[in-house]
Structures are given as C-alpha cells and as structure tokens.
Image (cartoon, rainbow, N blue to C red):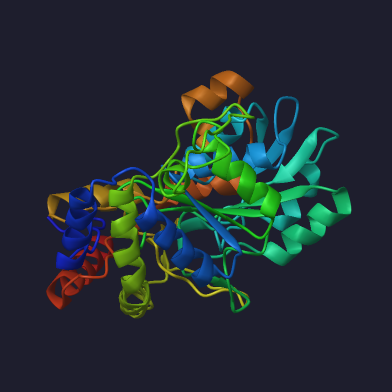
Length: 376
C-alpha cells in the first residue's frame, strides 16, 4: 500500500529521543526550549511556545487574546474540526465563513457579511499548505477592530508575499502531527511578537505556574512557584522536543521534496481538463502539506468512485478536507448553515499521496494509476 503520507525519521531522531530518555529529563525542558528557539528564528517571531498539539495551541492563544464567553470568532468550515472546536473550548462561538473556490482558504469577500456586534476575532486557516490572504484579512480586521489569530497547522516553512508565516498576526499556531511536513508525533506551537501573549501561554500551558519546572530545577536555589491563573497541562515532552530539533534540521529538504513531487503531479495531470490541480495566487507558494485535486463535474467518474478504485489498487487517498459545519455536532448545535463553495469542495476534492521519501517508482505508480482510473 502506498500511504497518503508518512513522517521522515532517521537515526538522528532515534538518537535524540534516546539521549533525552537517558538524561532523565523527559518533561518539557532544555530540548523543547531549543526546538522553540529554532521555530521562532525560522518564522521570524520573538517568541515560540510549544504545546501538546495545535488544538491546545489554538485554545491557549484564544484565551491569551481575551476571547471567551459571549464572543464570536470567524472561522472557515473547510478545515479539520479542531479549528472550530478550539473556539468552543475557549467558551466562544465559531461562526463559519465560506472559502475561495481556488485556494480553499477563507474568502475575504465573505467575511464582512458574517461580522456582528459580538465578533471579536478572525481565524484564517492556511489550508493544505497554502497561505491565506493575510493582508486583506488584516485590513478587514482593522476596519472592524477585530483580532487575527492564524491557524497555521499545515504550513510550517511556508510564506506570504515572501515573508515566513508565523509573525504576521498577534498569534500564529502550528501543528507537528504526523500528517504535517515535520512531526513530533503530536505537538503544537504558538508564535507571537507580543510579550504579554507569550507570557500568558507559557503559564497557561503548565497549570498556570509563574515559573516553569525547568527554571525551578536549574535555578541553583529554592524557588517556590505561584499559580496566578487557572491553567492546563498542555506541555510538550522533552523527548518530543528532541525529535523536533532534528526535524527542523530537515525542514528545507522536506519542503523541497514535496515541491518537486507536487510539480510532478501538476505536470502529469495538466492535460486532464476535468482534474483541477492546486492553484497558486500571486502572494503565496504552495508547500504541498497535502496534494489536493478537484474532480470536475464533467469527469468520467465521481470523486468517491476514483477513491475506491485507488484503494483497490493499493494507493491510499483521502477526501480533500472536511466541512465542519456539516458534522453532526455542529448541525445539532447551530442548525444547518449554507456554505455552497465549502460544500462543493468537500464533495469533489481528494488528496493523493505525498511525502518526502516517496520513491520514483511510487510517484510513477500514483500518476499512472490515477490517470488510468479517471480516464477509463
């Protein structure tokens, strides 16, 4: 079976994890701090705070921004359900905005129609490795005095207008889940240039303590911490931090390989007028966290028929992205919301395998099999 993706590890991650275990310091500590510094430097942010996953990163960032009960946050539905869930975890209400049919990101033209007196923030998602139109979203936010928090789960190493994603907004959140370009198994990160947000996230992720475990244990004197806020246990382990350090060293190579494979697919399917390959706007380059194609209405087979045939041929695929507003919980909670572009996208898009260590044989097999299935 050719999988939809797989993480790229070698003996360096094995060694780093083993050294962390042998050190005896396995909770959040020196290796996690090194990982945070590497991410902060890469994205151009003053602060990077590791968390247990991107959902907890989003939750803490929302709280640090002062978002809570009675507030509304504008989010795309065409995203993993964690985007909307994190708003609910913060006590606020997610309000779904439709997407641009080409980029699959929140459509700036649809934002203002969703703003109400309760709206406090906009949470764009950089979907499947392509940056959303941040400047336009920021202009709308300034006009209505709203905050911007970026869900950058899929786009570590990506750029907007040539500048790394990670420091454009008050807070930006990344994921290091195995489906992402680099991984720590589970893991997340909040990046920010705001010292107050960084300090709040730092306390909130560790039960609300005003001094970290590592700082206390390395102080050289007795330090008794206090708990000035209600916090959570959202820390990353130092074993994961060690893996993250090694993964960051590979990031450029991994992104380059994904780009090469994505371009191979683009060229291989360019002559199929019923297959829409990934679109790139002028302001961003694709990082191909996923390779997403849309099956047009004139295709010989439906999306689901193609996915079933690929599965039978030993090649994993996935639906493009879920539409969170159609999931039972959200329908039961808020009723049926109409988002026609999102709904069409979730019915007609699918993901093909892409990972850095794909062999030429695997790439060729995916291309040959996909073309054979969709044309027949």
